[in-house]
Image (cartoon, rainbow, N blue to C red; front, top):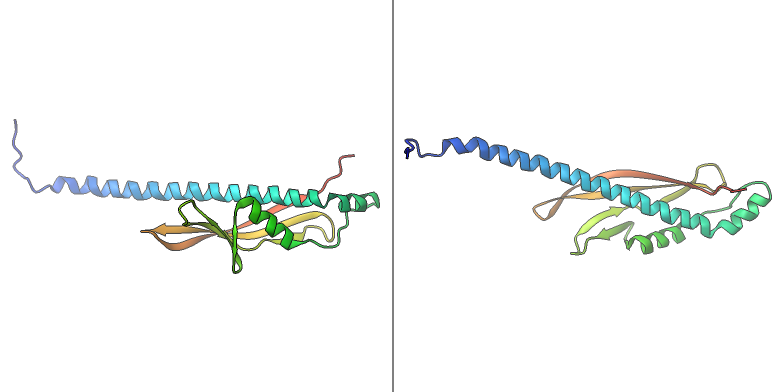
Length: 159
């Protein structure tokens, strides 16, 4: 058995630094993947609720289409926000809608959605909101990743 002459451990510094660097890169990649997934799920949920909102108002819209246009007077933003909170289990607090994890930590928060017409007074609706995904470090929120989201929906006749 061969004995080591230098027992100070200088050869372990580089592998330790490389392991820390690889772990940091892996952490950023995992955070990015989970944030993208969260954005897609949130966008999909808001699209489902928006389509449901359009379908709930379909009788009024159908009567307008029978008269030759898909005119609608106004959009009830509060009804949409309440339906979104029920569907996505969001909590209203102040001017934001909050989503929490099972352990009570903040998952994300969104601004109240702004519902507008894509075409004036027709049922081609555009929904815009901003999603804030917290970046955690050592159990504290360091920053928020700010992601603007836009969802479109429209009522199309099938005949």
